[in-house]
Image 1: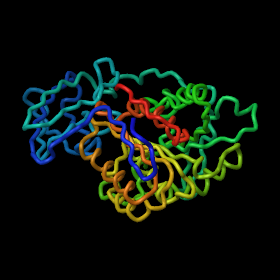
Image 2 (image 1 turned 180 degrees about the vertical axis):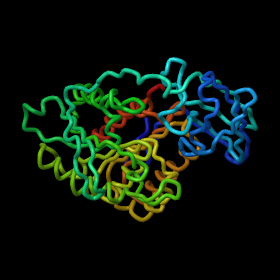
Image 3 (image 1 turned 60 degrees about the horizontal axis):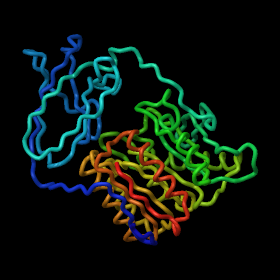
Image 4 (image 1 turned 180 degrees about the horizontal axis):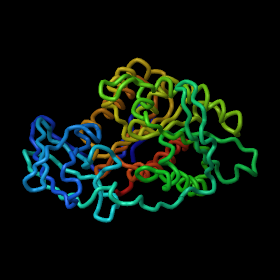
Length: 391
């Protein structure tokens, strides 16, 4: 069992992942499609080697036999994850019944030819009927909460623990991004985290209850969750977004709900770009957010976060949970490691760094590890024991 102490990095590792990052390889994709309606369309690959951009790096069409081909060069030994699209996530590949397919995964160690058969396309099937899975403890706080810092509106969800209405107790608050993916399968894009079901259960087990505020993302998600300008994605709006959380949303929640307002009782959490903006928030506002859940952070979009850790990290004294899946790519893993190591060097923060060799960049993975994050972040760490779990 690893001991927990200040200014340390805790690592719960299911499998140790190694990778030699020096060799450069080529990939040859050959793709056939069963759907004859789209033979003239351009097919794209979106994955960890191009930042999951759904309409870059086109595959050139071969008219002779309904086959598309793509040649990618200068790829290092690594695990890569990807899907094929026809230019948007609404036109992503699917099973022959319209259901989602899992991400393709390859472990690249040499020049290789990969052949794939696309069974169907998502947009050729009627929307799959989804069911509402939201628990009774979740409600919509506002369908159009105004964000003056960004001059736009956003839907806000709130989870209130069992017993909130019948007690006078005050509760910690967790602010989470990508709100439509937290509670309800019906409105989620790629599946939900099951935060409400998880907390309903853990409250009974641990008695550590928490209010959760979910903020939906919008069409400018990559900008809102990035504090820095990016050549590919455009101007960063993350500074304005975090200012909205601090200056508008948190004061509103503290005024209208029974909350514990101190930093040690204020948590922020998110995944991918939501992980980036969560980490930025604790660096810029350590007097507001004292704890964070940083799942699969896309630090490659914001490389400035490492330098920001060096300059602002010394202010951090709270608890910070980092997670990365082994199938997300070696660069993602290394970027997170660089940040956690730097934070451990410059601060008195308590850091829990968790990797999972089978984990992908998906809601399924984040749902799996959310309970571990919650139990640790809400615990009295001096008495907490990490339980090793099988994948």
